[in-house]
Length: 396
Image (cartoon, rainbow, N blue to C red; front, side, top):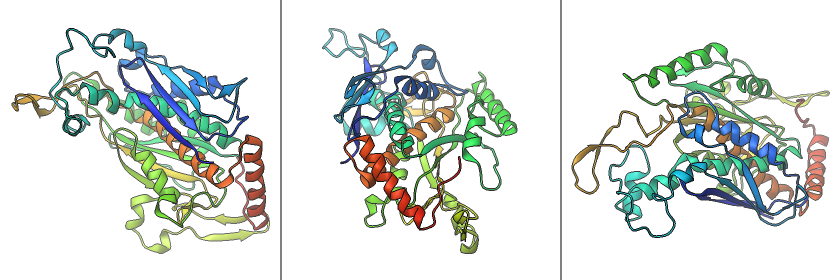
C-alpha cells in the first residue's frame, strides 16, 4: 500500500481541495482537529488582511463514514469566502469583459518564469495557483496524517527560532514538546520570550509607512517517537532526509532546509559532530547529542527527527521592487497583491504538515496494513522487536 495525495484550487477560486489515497480503513477522522490545524495556519503576528476574510473549515466529501476512513480516497474541501469578491475576475465561464491583464512580475515570485512557461500574457493564472493560500489544503492533509502517526506514538511539533535576524537560543538537548507548548502562546510562535519580543518589534518596524517591508526567518519541526528504521539507505529516493528536504522545500518561500545540525556540521571536526552511542541496563541505547537530527543513513535512529527550514521575506512587497512590463518591455514597479509582512509562524505549521505527510508515507511503506488495526499491529510487532534489541521509546 502506498500513501499519495494531490491538491487543487486557486487562491481566489471557489475552493481548495485535497485527495489522499492509501489511508488504512477505520482511522478516526476528527473534523475539529483538522479545523484546529487550519486555524493555527492562519495565525501569527504579521499576517495580512486575507486572514480576516477567511475562516478556514474543512468539508469531508468522500472516504469517511461515521468518523472513520473506509479504505478509499479521502477528499476534502476548504471553501474560499473571498471568492464572492472575485466572481468576475476568476470566472470559470467565459466573460464579455475580462479583467485587465497583470503584466508586472514580482521579483522572487513565480510570475516571470510562470508566464514564460505557460505562455500567458497575464500573471493572474500564475499567481493564483502558486500562492501560499494553497498550503491550506496541505495542512488539512497533514492533520489527517497526524491521526495515523499518533496511533503508533509519533507526535509532531514546531517552533520559530529566528525572524528578521533575531535568533532564539535553546542550549543543550531541547525538550521539543515543552518548547512547542510555550510557543503556542507566543504571537510569533517562539518559545524564548525575550527573542519573541524582539521579533515582534522587528515586524512592527517593517509595518511602518516609512519602511513597508517583509521579513523571513527560520522554523524548526520535531517528530517525537519515531522508531528506528523508517526510511532506507538502499536508494536515493527512499532516504528519509531526502524526502523531508523535498517536502519542506515545496512550501512557498522556503529556500533552505537543514536536518539536525545541518550546515553547522561543516564548521567543526567530526569528534564534535557525530552523536556518541551509549548503553545502560535501564535506558537501553542513548545518545549524548542529536546533531544528526534523528536520521542516519537515510533512516530514523530512534532520536527525535529534527529539521529546520529557512523562509525568505515574502516577495509581494508593499513598496514594490523594480520590474519590467512583460507587454511593453518598459521599466515598471512590480505588481502588489495584498500580502503578509511576516508569515514564518504560519510556515512552521505548514512545515509540521509536510513532515507529517512524509512520515506517514514512510510509516505506511514500512508497516502496511489495509486497516488501522493491522497497521498498528504490524508497527507494534516491529517496535517490540527493536525494543528487544535495546532501543527504548522516549518518555513523553
